Structure formats: structure tokens, C-alpha cells
Length: 240
Image (tube, rainbow, N blue to C red; front, top):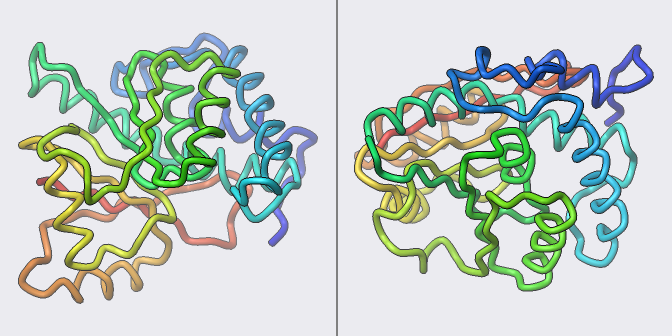
């Protein structure tokens, strides 16, 4: 798949299209502090370089081409940034003084956790990954990018403690079958939210219907990924 672009810098233009500005204004992101574009763009260029450098060794993603990484991975991860910010703002308001903690489960190459953590620099993110070599890559990224709000944890979703996270995100992790749905909802705090990056709505409906009586209430929020018009993307939002 080739990205569709008429610009010389898909990363810059894509970030602007998603609402990231030179001032880093939080107005478009439910009041959640956001890193200015002038700082965010160089961070992502460095992240792309790290992905290109370590991809062959750690089998992180399925492309080494700069613009494909920018569009299919970084911009795709950030296509849900406004939704994640809205969930975070509502969760912080409900939790009061309680620390709002987000997790990226099965983080792999750090997607969507690293792009979200880089953008929302005050929000703590735990990147949960079961493979030690990929955890080493994630720790390298957090250090190289200066993401002090990121913690890397080598673990499996099934072994995480209960009632730990306010928000759980994942992308290209596993289908939402009965066992995994139970595991993911178990690690959420009361009133916690699960946000799953998915593709076509008809496939989402099939996946959820297969849960039978265990199917939770959920909403599907369409996502628009700049320069990626040939792939349907959606965010499935499930409250505990």
C-alpha cells in the first residue's frame, strides 16, 4: 500500500490536519495539555529513524519507508488523539485527585502508546509488552525521545493486576474474543475505558456479536487518517 500525498512532508501536514498546532493549544483536545507542533514533529522524525534502525532486528513493523511509517503508524495512532483526550478529560474529572493512568497493551513498536504519550506529555502511559527485545526497544525510544511520562513493563495482559488502569488502548493486538475481553475489562478501574483501534465497521460488528451474552455496550467512532483514504479505520470505545 502506498500513501496518498500531494505534499512534500506528510508528517507535518498530517499533524496539522489532526489539530496539532504551533502553539500546542489544548483547546482542540478537551483541555488536555498537548506538545507544540514545533517540538512534536522532531520527536516523531527521531522515532521514525529509530523504527527504521531497529525494525529488521526486532521485527517491529511491516515497512521501512519514511512516509509509510508516518502515515500508517504515527498518524494512524494519532487519528484517535481527540477521542483519547476527551476520554482522559472525563476520566480525570470523575476520578478527582486520583492519578489517571493509561496503558498501551501489546505495545510492540510503541503504537499507539508512544505517539499518544509524546503528544500528551503530562499523561502517564504504561507500555505493556511481553517480548523482552521489544521492551528494550521501547525503553530506548522513551530515553531517546525524552518521554518522562512513559513506563515500559514486560508483562502479559493476563498477568496484570486488576483495577489498575483508567484507560486501556491497543492497536493490532488481538481480536476482542471472550477471554481477552474479560482480561482487558478486569484490568480497568471502575468507570475505566477500553479504546481499541479497529478497521471496518462490519468486521467490528461480527467480532462483538461473537461475544454473545458477554457483549458489552460499545460505541464505534470513525477515524480519519490523513493521506490514508483507502483504509477504513474506527475506534471501538467500551466502558467497564
